[in-house]
Length: 129
Image 1 (cartoon, rainbow, N blue to C red):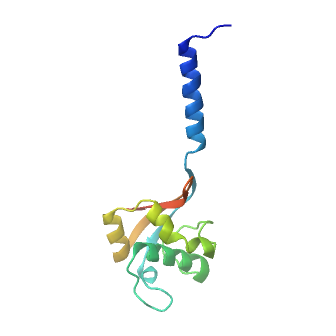
Image 2 (tube, rainbow, N blue to C red):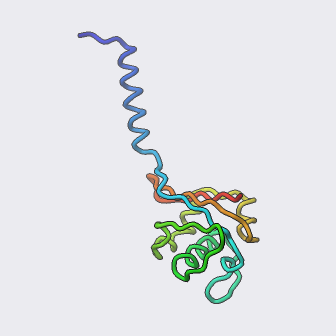
Image 3 (cartoon, rainbow, N blue to C red):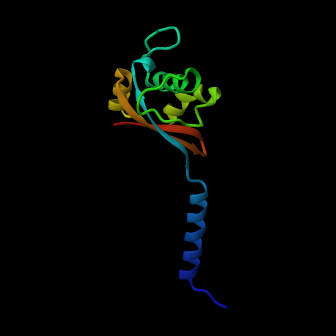
């Protein structure tokens, strides 16, 4: 049976698409949280200055200390203290725009956190709304 170049192109495209799809980043989990006054300070009552510190404190407050605000959702990923330690690196690999950074540092804002697993490691995208 003979196949033309059109068939070969379709097979090649399907193979490339399949390989690309296999490498696609995977959404592990997503949650929303309200960044309140309690999230802006660490356990020593020191004001946090970086968004990654505040996101990490929010998850520690929720999972470890039982402190939450209206709108906070649970997640299983940051229930693990070791994963909370990775927040800085995960945010640096993901996205958070300047306006979102500023809003998180000011507090009193709802955030949406998407946790992804990709070929270069886990990362998070942080959106403010």
